[in-house]
Length: 427
Image 1 (cartoon, helix red, strand yellow):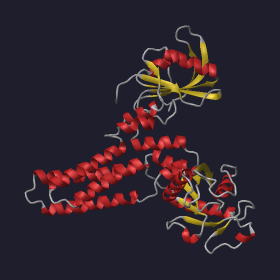
Image 2 (image 1 turned 45 degrees about the horizontal axis):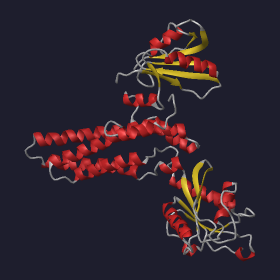
Image 3 (image 1 turned 120 degrees about the vertical axis):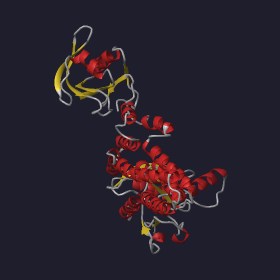
Image 4 (image 1 turned 180 degrees about the horizontal axis):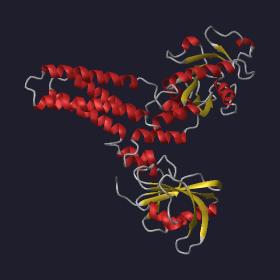
């Protein structure tokens, strides 16, 4: 365990509140708490104590005190939790007293969780899951984050690492002791290939980014097709300017929202046509890029002109107009003015968006995690094709390094500050 100073912070929400939780972690956590509360309860036993100023003995509050001894705590250090009344004056008084104790300082955002990581209590994938859990706004986000935070990916990685270490040991033995290692190499080749194949289904899973950031749903088509009206109707508010002048929308408009518990980034775009001026040309260029990047495309033009891609919903808009009554085959007839077809369109968007997301009971990989698993799979594939034991051993070392980066055991310093900076103070 890393030796360091003792930190403290308010770990519950901002006062006023019914209860406030102040957390202390580090080598002086117990002694600091004793200065305020007197004799501490047994580990993992809650007890009511009077909290008093160490210098004067003046009563500050009556609180519930919880004691956790290292390493059986959230940070793997000695930890104290003070569950006090949640008034501003009480919280401020306790934090002020803690700040005056030598060796104690206020924690930085995410520092408790960072200590848990650095002390081996959790790995980097679990820390990422916890960060996602704190930011979760939909039920699907909560479930995915919880699966990661509870160590689902960590356990799978540990299984892979165990297999990989055994393969590495055999490869090193072949280098040092075997004069004729053709048979052993053949077995190792097959096992390396089998482990690489085990990783591939994980790389093929839906990624975490659409679930975390929102599924990108892009409404596109020619000018004056009713794109902005449909966006406003789905969003339930006037977010995009609507006129009968072609080319009104010059830039994309993004509306974050949830539909059926699915996070979406509903995006209106400039009409796709040969632009008449530089500003519109920029808008058309951005619209084209968004069409290419869309997870789900709502196409509001001639279905024959729709981009050839999966998860495209062809919409025939403005069906409240006489000349637009008949919808082409395979399109959804929609009127933003009367609401006709909107429910069907929203249901279809939900269906297509759900196909982009991982299943509720599945662990999804973020970009960083997928990158390192991909590196491990590539190294294992190379090992399976190696012609010499020395080359195979080096490829297996690269695979081990990729797993170490995945769990945070090596080469992730540039990731840590960014990750733990996402946490609130006291977490």
